[in-house]
Image 1 (cartoon, rainbow, N blue to C red):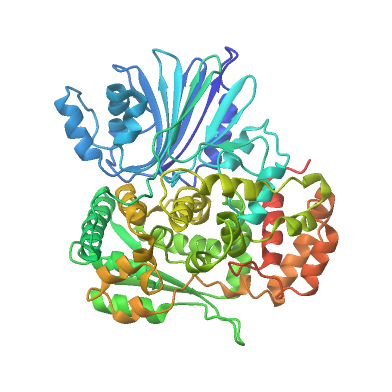
Image 2 (cartoon, helix red, strand yellow):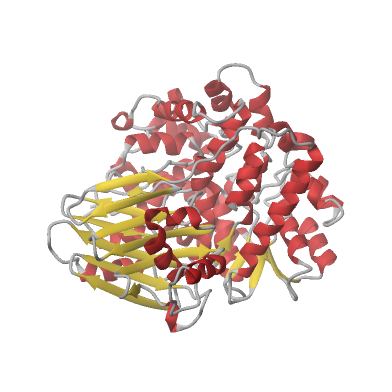
Length: 593
């Protein structure tokens, strides 16, 4: 796990070394253990290392293989690297290191751009082929690892964070109205290749791009998700047995690919508790970590789930760390968390993960988390609502997911940012893709391949890597996702959702954790906006910077400020917080000159 950056010139000039250094400085928190730079005429790489596999100097980056005429910077983990290494050894390749980075180099030499199809893992990498003067960029199937880029007529720059590209300079920071529509409609999701800024793009998940020295570009999607039933009919017990087998393999893969201790982020929910249960017999002195927040009084929701996580800790006798954060600390640390968001993210979980990752990073470098299980196995409340609704696929999805309909979007933003209903067009296009048997198959596939990339996957990367902590998500193992996608949706939604996981967990973890109502990472102060938090949001939305930018329609802002707890999205997000977060992110990250 690391931070990567680089520049490729198309105009026969050499890359700007100061720009590379500025990008690397921005990436220092992602890779606190070491740094390195590589240059080759028109190409320069920068790397910040978080040492997890092969801690020696042999796996330092940028990694250059002079014999194969290849150079690489890589962020992530290839979980099957040992098996691939053995395969490549049999093919005659020699290795000078013991890690997964060199496996990527050899795999590319052996299989070309199809090497990505051999990788089990989370990855974003850039590989320079010196012989044909081509830069190859690739991103994992679910976009767990980020990869941003900016292109002009003279050069390409890329980096693990949007902020690193801004630090290099020369980026168009004007707001893309289409991306803004997506952001305010799809719970802050802006599907690749767009970002909110016109000058910054991101590699789509499950995709690779090649750039030649003259600037020619080729984009290829190397993986897609089949959401149709298999030819052979499987019984419920068959599906459960297959799920248990593949999940066990996924958790084991995520645990073993590390030369440092591995912990678990234990929320108290089914998903992270199940990971603990599956690991407990294999890991001595398993370390677990939970966080909770101060209640805000009245009838608002509770700020922690310790009553459930404590039961799991007791059952498996883990070495547990429990952190309770007062609301004053949440507000004080909020600007830090927002500065670490590569793109604005409105989920209240962000500050929770940021503060938890800070504590966890003091104990371990790698932690497994339960993110992805709800999308893969149908755990959210809106799935059955969509299923029961009447109307077209778009109408059923829109009426139970969109944060605001198109008319409200037009009311929200200044007329300069008005567009057609591009978010409905996007959803309609994605839901109509082939190889999905039913409406719910379409929805679950869209969620796990597109929506999840920006929420919660991006949150896990940004907030954990801000502290040099590698967060791994075994429920997004692609073999497990492929299995679940072919499973009948009604089996996933049985008993309130995530039935296969509940069945696997029964008898392993406490029943109270399995049978509890679905919970969400609670930070009540960002949902029930009162006191100092309300004052903070007022100051942001009434600031000179906000007024100068003129992004929002002032009458709409005034309406939200007049009743801050009266306006919620269909997914129970506070609309005032959504606007304040977006504006605050722009103030923290984008130059207003």
